[in-house]
Length: 343
Image (tube, rainbow, N blue to C red; front, side, top):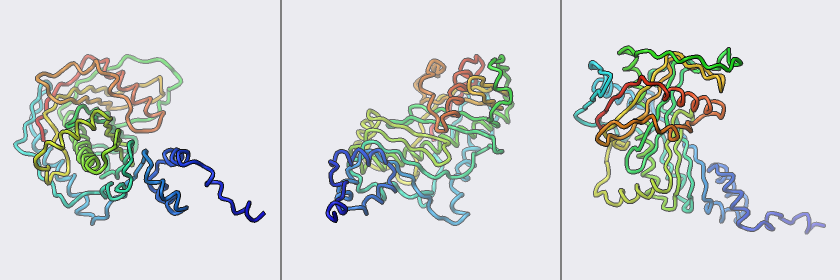
């Protein structure tokens, strides 16, 4: 009886089945705990090819920890929007990229934790949020973004609202005609601030991605999100291949920016003062959609690309509302066309 009681039934499981379990587990902290279970577990954990890693923030004093994003937004605000705005083909041209203090990373490098996961193919990194929603106040405010990269930014979609909540009249499944309205200069400036803030976050995550790719050569897809589910960067196998080839050809590293260069951009902005979403039962005030692409000689008709702009980070019910909002706003004829120089 004693031999039966002491038998370890995990020993009967083949290695491939244990690896399947570890890949379903994904969470790096939980996988680290599995290292302590047995020598066999310890020999298999680092063969996991699917990992989720939530990065802890670094501890800084209150002044230094917030100086970086505030300074950048101040510089960009002065250069980009403290001038008269034109609604069409507005050109924004800073002379230089703003300097950043290379010693103020707000979170630990994921390579510190991932260095032993040499076989990882699918990676999801969750970073801390650097602060509140820039330019938004109130519990019900909304700012979401999604970006795709290869060597540089491919596209970025920003969805914002001053209020996002379930509609009281959601049981009435009747869509009212959307009332289009011209943005005031102050309202347009605010939405440019939202856009710049999201682009800075996206380019910082792209920089982080390049650091990870330099150490992990089997990666095929990577998602970098944040703990507040505000923004999401996604790259697939083809984009990763392009990035690796570009990194090999670079003679020197981008030294002190801690974010990737944002190229010249073309943008389209849609705005609705009140947007009812009867399919999902939500209502948005100050609803704003910005679709961003690199300039390729002309500002293209971005409204034909609905399929690229779903999949914001959030709860399932909210994501359906976000997708509905994108579809409805892109049907509108009135929009604002702008360009932005690289920074």
